[in-house]
Length: 302
Image (cartoon, rainbow, N blue to C red):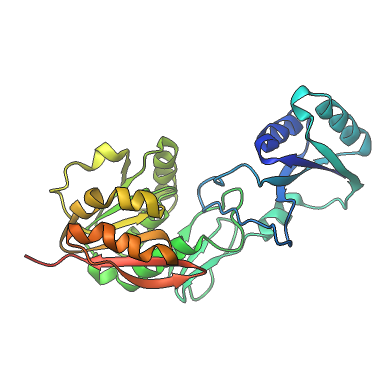
């Protein structure tokens, strides 16, 4: 087995990867060329969804071939392409013949949300202490844990099930549907998972089926008017859209209901408080994780 390593810019990573597969590579992977340096950049891909980008600003694309001749021929053909002027060969090296599927899967482990609540890839056994499990396989860049914002939202769900058990829940910007699935696991009775990306809607439906839970996934127009209040509204996106969506999201929170917002950096807390104050929701920081915060509020009754 021979490994061909190529240095590529972010803009060419997907093209290089596709070309290598067309050239009959046995497997292709992408790594941060600046890993373990000051220029290293985290690139998270949530479970059940692909990574947000195909690669890093400087990426190493590695491809496996059965022998050196095949790897050399692939590199020669690829570098001859007009678009490959900035692609460079780093190495062609022999590697041990291993079970590559098993090796890849071994890099992805179960993720602890609480002592008894875990996210577990399909090929892993759930830990003995896990009484609640979400089965989601990792995206392209999902490593040893989900993004801090997802962990915080899921922790809130696990610790506050009494606030929505048997009630309606809205997951706005659902992505893979992981928060909606988490709410279902903790007793939500009717769940709307909403996203502007049709691929996210499809992913949420598929992941819900894999976890034996029911939810209604759709585009934003599927949720109806703000008069249909939810006892729990979840939104794990980013601070800017959360501010823009403040009237809409707040309008869906029922009297006595909770709103849970993530995708917010610590320095953005005051901006979010100011955006939601006119809606009658007084946001407060309820969790912190690696520079990110979770902001929550409860609407007054009456």
